[in-house]
Amino acid sequence: MVQTRLFQVDAFTDRPFAGNPAAVCLLNEERDSNWMQSVASEMNLSDTAFVLKLDKGFQIRWFTPTAEVDLCGHATLATAHVLWSEKVVNKGQSIHFKSKSGELKCTEKDGIIELDFPATPAKEIQPPTELLRALQVQPSFTGQTAFDILVIVESEQIVHSLKPDFTILKQLPMRGVIVSSISSDSQYDFVSRFFAPGFGIDEDPVTGSAHCCLAPYWSEKLCKMEMIAFQASKRGGELRVRINKKRVILGGHAVTISKGELYG
Image (cartoon, rainbow, N blue to C red; front, side, top):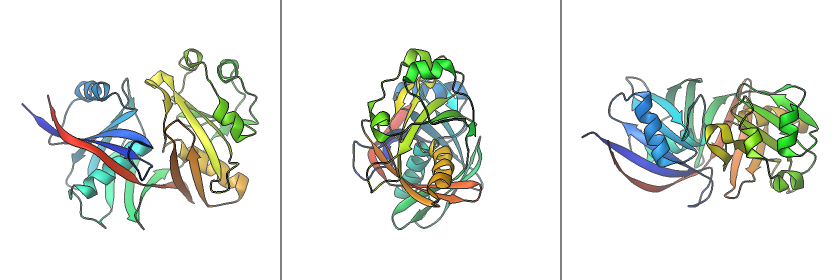
């Protein structure tokens, strides 16, 4: 029976039981997609990362409980944390992942893990009627990214008070919906929430990949290249974001919650 090292990590937080939990599987050999999907469903977290060492770097794939996704920030951050903390990769050495979204690089700077991800700016669209029905808001901007719909609202209070109709959202043809506003708290530049019921996640606690869209949008609006963001889910999470040409640098902490072995 194959034994696979398995970790659960809280990402984009420096304390346990906050941020966004991810499972990380360190593979000893190639495994098929059906097996990975079964494991992700068993873990029942917003994302499970599957990592395989290559001659140079690592291959990484991400699965929600119901589907594979092309990009996931918090599970990548969790994976980098595991590779360094378990001494698979030496501290101070950068980590390179091959993924469905191209090559991703992870480094550590001043105790913060940084992810170098592609920017996914939003192109303005007319908000779909079903989206407005599901959210019950009047956006000041609606945009389409490679993965999601971005909805900008006028205040942080609106972001916090949202109670989406997930049945309607689930029918929309996109990965998820990002709702964001400028922050009313001076320690943050902007806040957001992320909903992806079509991928088995009604609300994601902290979504790194959503900030590949949020960072370019708010950078232009606030005239800032570096910002601090807060994802206002029940668990909550803090992200440091920085624009680097057509890339977004996402920074955060991670905490290992458990580790063991997966049989099967």
